[in-house]
Picture 1: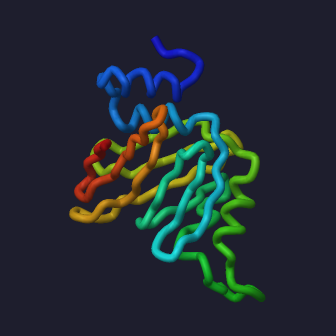
Picture 2: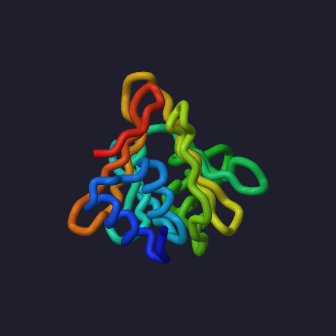
Amino acid sequence: MAGNDPIADIRKSWESRDMQSPSVALSAALRGREVRVFRREADWGFDFGERLHIAASVPWRIVTGDGIAHGDEDDGQQFGLPQRIDGEARVNTLLSGQRVSKVEVDGETADLRVVFDGGARLDFFNNSSGYEGWQASVPVGEEVLTVVALGGGELTAV
């Protein structure tokens, strides 16, 4: 029976080596959290606090009730605006104050959808049959469970 502390539940499963599926573990860990997004040299980082983060080298986007509000490729583009788009600032503004309410992982593709309570969602598109798409680090006590979207659409945890 699950308790009120999802991280404690994951830790207990991990310690007993009776680990739940990677998608269930990731979902439990992310629910209720806010995110801070940052651009790195070769990819994007999504920090959910307490050593819980996602690294994405695949396409991703923020969707709101008005449609696609930002895609990773928008960073640095001008689109006829007076200044180039600062993707990091834009995404952090779009997601400010919103908490994760739902997490979905597509069983065929390992695409990841993170839904927020303010109506926005964050979609990660796993776009290769061979390369890894995104990785999530989930703290479990002193250990870190790494959930990886493998090329071809599989999901694994190490």
